Image 1 (cartoon, one colour):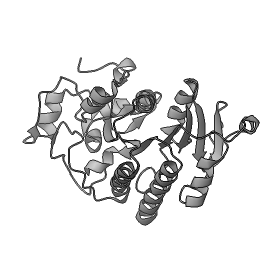
Image 2: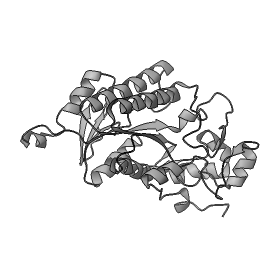
Image 3: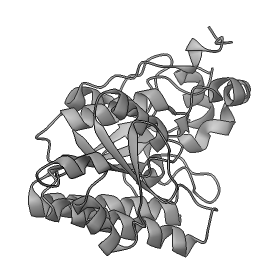
Image 4: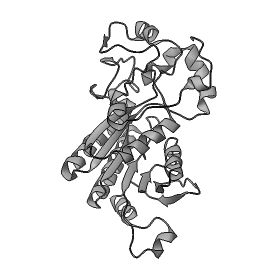
Length: 298
């Protein structure tokens, strides 16, 4: 596939872009900062500028494409670019940048006839991660039906992005899939970060005790590109286990006491439900911090 990937130089994007290139796809990385991956075309694009977005999506990606009889079209768009969290810039700029860039990408993609768009939403949409003070989910495990009523600018922008994506899908009938991505973890971060998480699980309550390995996130995007015909869908994206050594029962008793539990859960199962991605996409995460670190509770 010829894929237009926004934000491919970011923490998550650089892994997904490399994976897609390794699978033989022709990937254009649209970002303000080049990735400089040998198998990926870099294109500097300000995604808040609608004209730039449209021009980039309609244009060439490499000099080699000059040899073709006509400029090729993109088969898919993957939109990861964003101000990635609060407290990097002002709340107003975070919201405006993320909402406008998402609108511009979706409008250009659908007007140019792209029939598959995958976009990054966020765990923060559930209103727990960046809440002021203590906040718990309404119930566990948290699935895609859980209310999305956040109070911070970043999560608000992601909810707005989902609404925008759903509207463009309704207008065009294209496949538009949103990924509510949990805390992104690179493989080297297991040794750096997880010993503290295993010792003190309270460090993970804002992430609903979940995480997603970049390798499994890459495969999730790949499955979204492979599976057609779902229309508009959003998917939680997390690894199958929690990011702490405490068992599911121990976490429930300490952090979620009195909260509705909607189904029986496994001993170490994530509270960030991934059943929908398994059922509709056939995706199953393969990695765990347990592959790198010993589980003190085992």
